[in-house]
Image (spheres, rainbow, N blue to C red):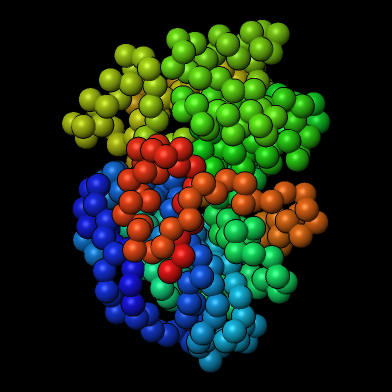
Length: 389
């Protein structure tokens, strides 16, 4: 089959690779109808996630048609149309029983690798390094889906792929970002990062009752998108001190909640950015946490900071004094997607939200390298790329 493969920093190629096979009685094989390039894929593309190997098949946002199932998979059959969540969950361990699916205790066969960096291992993830299982991803013609009797959700109506594909990751991720932010009716929420995940966090915050959402970014086309959604845009490259601006916009108090939808490759127009780049280049820190620092400093006393931007390792100059002395709550997670599949599908079916609003580009699988480049470099006003094998 054809698949998009990681070939080193800044390089992906669509190659012929072996077809996936049933390896376990709980497996299924899915013929991919749509996949997407995720912002967190760019961390792989830029070489910031360890334990990648040349030839690894990428992609953790995908859906398609079941073509084969193992003998223990009784809830799916060939011909079923499914969306596949990006974290792989067994459904039976303590974490899964407590709906903490992205930290499943059984789905990562390389847990020892992750424990060396993270202390404990999270779940396996499709196409996202050997530390997280080494599972081939879904930017391909077919994919093997482990624990297929637990993870995929069947799409049993005629909703097009574009409306349901993002149940695989970024819609639930934006939702959990807003949920962890503990939003109440009338709250003011600040979201750093106006990319697709930030856009879903903004939409989710409004659905949860936020009165005002302020979006911080630097790309005009993204800021125009969030302004059309009803958010107040702030371009940090206009010489604005973001914490001061947020205090001015909230009567001196600061936002009730702050959401970091950027993660480890944060950019900023200050000398601290050069500091983080230098530390990262010399491997003295793995992540650039400028947004995390700024969100903590900006949040009102007693407020909540929610982290859904991906971080891979260690950060420097964490503002622990601000966090502790001002009674802040800090929460973060890779999304427990399976928990949200049915409720968010119900919202799509009711017409509460049409997730396809984030799509800017449709491409064939063979055009995936071009899609990665324009998505990373913010060319052609690229907001979200959907791939069609």
